[in-house]
Length: 120
Image (cartoon, rainbow, N blue to C red; front, side):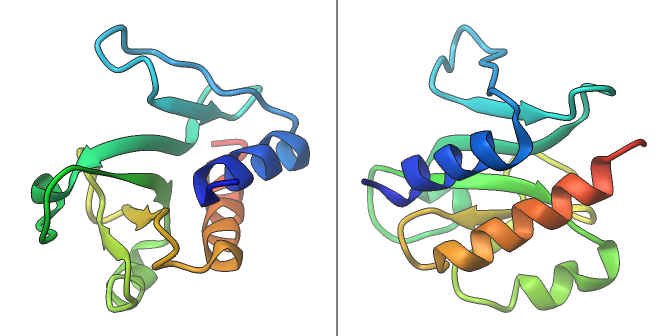
């Protein structure tokens, strides 16, 4: 099972939310939202490596998560944590789902994002 599949399965079970797919042009992009507010807490995408400033060709799976602005800089110093793709880079980061970022850290980032978007 891929890291993306495992993480999405865990997110569905832990937060009891199902992803939606808001863009017809990108049907595999999956958004997890807060049940009450509809705010996003995780966005799963496949992005071309070159659009992320990465070497190589083809796409790579990422998840965008909200983070506290005071730790975004230190998170981005970790391997596989990048400025958020197509999101506010002060509040969001992208984590590679190619095993560069350990699954445990990905789940912690999603947990933090869930908490930051809860009730806002």
